[in-house]
Length: 228
Image 1 (cartoon, rainbow, N blue to C red):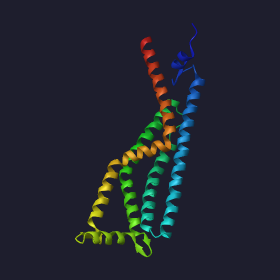
Image 2 (cartoon, rainbow, N blue to C red):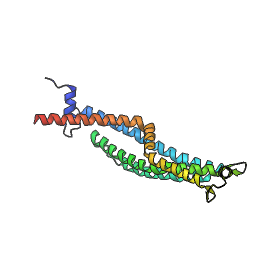
Image 3 (cartoon, helix red, strand yellow):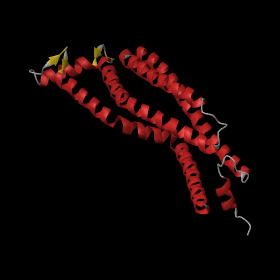
Image 4 (tube, rainbow, N blue to C red):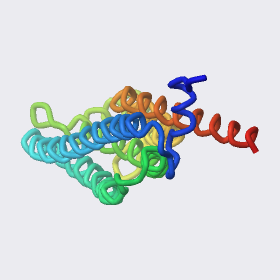
């Protein structure tokens, strides 16, 4: 009985010495490369956008009188980009001449490490972003008067016994610290949401390819075991 396309595929898929289904193997390899290249382009564009945005925001922050916010954002975003540039270099080292399964597995390993490191960083940079925003608004001046001073005077007017630390009400310092701790706690989840929004469609497609490959490989192994 003639072999079905499915049986040919199972026998030939990703086998280094396979003499069958070379076209199907090549199609899967090209599909894998296409999806991964799309991710790489998006990743590169995202990094460029972060750099451009941080430089622009730095300039604007000086113009509107909130330089601490601009400097803080610029330094933090620059650190994120520098870390991810190292990942970009290691990504370019993945050998595309490998068969499609090994190529996808190598990329999946790279992506897992990328996500792990960025999730860890997110627990630090989201609280820092919040702190820089608070400092920026505290510095911001309206009619020659800083918002921070106006808030402090209003609190003292309502509570003359309010405790100050370096001229800042302790209740504000404690509130900011508590919110920073909360952001540190949920920072990884915020990063996961951000990752899904930006790269979700590409990552789902890659997962589908990887799942198909692993399923077919497992079926082929089971078939070989039965034959032996």
